[in-house]
Length: 150
Ligand SMILES: [Zn+2]
Ligand SMILES: [Zn+2]
Image (tube, rainbow, N blue to C red; front, side, top):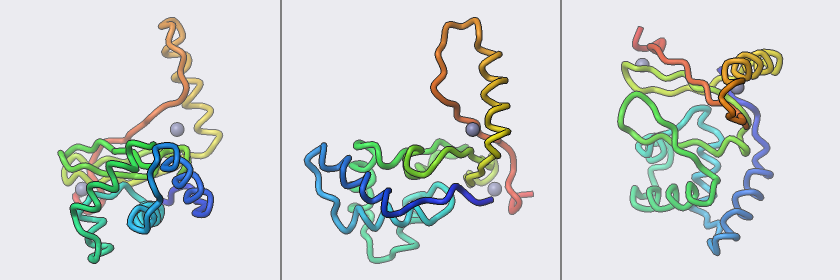
């Protein structure tokens, strides 16, 4: 399961620009979080992030994630447990889907082929055709039990 490949330079430029709009600086702590999230390959919990970078403090990770989320660099991912998970905003990391384990809460990214994406869009478009709703995208999670929990 590999996510879309990420151009880290572009992600940093976009993050800096979005923070600048909110009069915020792209500090080294924020930069480090963006780099971590770009490399984890799956949505990360705060304990995951602290484990990967023991020098970061929990309070600064909380604060920086909240700011990055506010300016649209990071988004929260809902799983089957009540732990907050974070990933880079979809427009930064590319369209993908999640595998959600209902047993341990683990979330993994997966991508489907562009051909399959078009099929999904067609199916969804047909399903909602008489609702008056104008779709701009979709979120599709697969729910089940992960390899470790099986
Ligand atoms: Zn699991
Ligand atoms: Zn999709």
